[in-house]
Amino acid sequence: MRLNELNAHERRLWNAYPQGRPVEVPGAPGASNAPGAPHDPAAPDRTIRSEVVAALLLGANDAGGPGDRPALRLTGARITGLLDLRFTEITAPVVLTDCRFDEAPLLKGARTRELAMTGCTLPGLVADTAQIDARLTLTHCRLTGPLVLSRTQINGDLDLRHTKISFPDGEAISAVHAQVGGDALCTGLAVEGTFRLSGAAVDGEFDLEGVSLHAPGRHALDAYHVRVTEDFTCHPGFSAEGRLILSGATVGAAIGFCGARLSNTGDVALEAVDVTVARNFDLGLGLTVDGAVKLDGTRVGTELSFRDAELTHPGGTALSLRAVQAREADLRTRRPVDGTVDARGAHLGTLHDDRDTWPADLRLTDTTYDTLATPLPATDRIRWIRRSPGGYLPQPYEQLAAAYRRLGHDDEARTVLLAKQRHRRAGLPAHTRLWGHVQDAAVGYGYRPLRAGLWLLALLACGALYFALHTPDPLDPGKAPPFNAVFYTLDLLVPIVTFGQEPAFAPRGPGQWLSYTLIASGWILATTVTAGVSRALSRQ
Image (cartoon, rainbow, N blue to C red; front, side):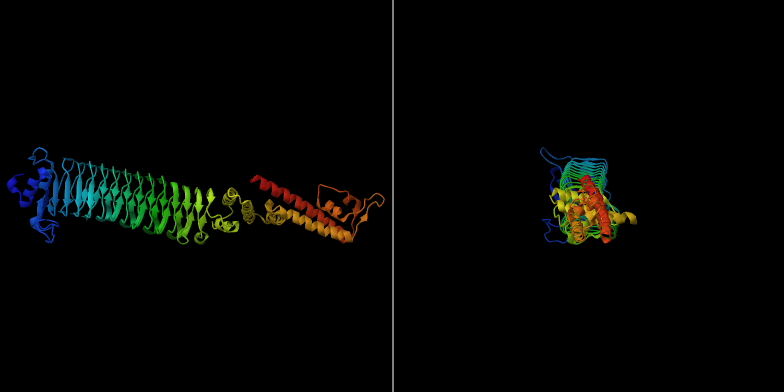
């Protein structure tokens, strides 16, 4: 390239590069020689050819003296032509402000110290497999094509704050297996199209506060198997239209969606299957979801929270917590979840809930929890576990009873286990149900043992009163002991113990039928007590 072929702006940039001096194209915002002038990057007099920029970055002007630090610092230019820096090594920082590119720069496989663009307009940027020794900054920029960072290694921060990227028919941001050595700062980022960073690694915080993702009917965010060393933050002001995928992600601190708005009507809005998060997974405090939330197999180090969230997926599973593990879980949503809540196989540690927001369809099969933060009366909790459709399942009752026992509420635990037997009875054949009703009435399936004593006392009182008024005839008057109505009735009621009264006297008429009734009742009481006590002891 000949120096006499350079225009005035190119020559200024050429001369300033060896010392790293900034160059402001006249009319650019902030230019000292044109205060207040309107900014029009497309004006012909602001043109700088991409071949001049490439030549400088590849060492065409090495006229710097000792101590000089070359850098390309340019404001307000229109860069024409294709800036092709593929597989090159750029030793100087590149700082561009309010510049406009006619074509998407190509930095595939390049290595550079620092690339910073602020307020620039680009038809895209291709920097896959590039290596950036410091920061990659694209703030307040507008991209009308894709940002390609797949397998890019950034040793500092990735800064995309307040940038708008539009590529609605494909991947607006492609950062598959990208590595960021610092923070990923995306506050205020607006994306039309898919934001894909599956397999990426961020050694600091991933900040998505105020981000807007728009990919209706498609993947708005694909962060499959992403690894974040610190927080993964999507609150406040985060919104997404389309599916969010965090499945397989590993987060070293917390995940937060407080105040976010997720929408993927009729489909999964948030898919976070098999996620591992060291601290909190916060999906509450104003989160609104139109679509399903699927967290199957996720492991949360401390608390999984849906406090004050609104989840809507009518006719389907709005919240899937199958096999989730959390030390603490808060299911106190702002209003009842519109759709099914499936917590089968989950372990939820300390469980917080509110009966005013219990979902209509709640699946608790094989769900375990250590403590109920709000135990409530057993009758209420029985209605809670009976919200699961389908037939009789014993485990939810036994889990609830165990939770009451750990709290020292043994009476409530027995109430739950009695309800379990009654639920089981409803599905048995008619003759078995009849025997079940007898056991229930007699001793409450062994969980109400005082009932047997009350039945015994009632029958004893009836029999003693009758036989006291209608003394039966002795079988052998010379050998019969003195008649005692109470012990005679006990002889009839208690099948094993005998007081010598029943063999010595023979009632007639109604007394005979009463004696038969007392004998049968005694055997029924003895059988039900034995069966009930055995069942109760086997569950201890």
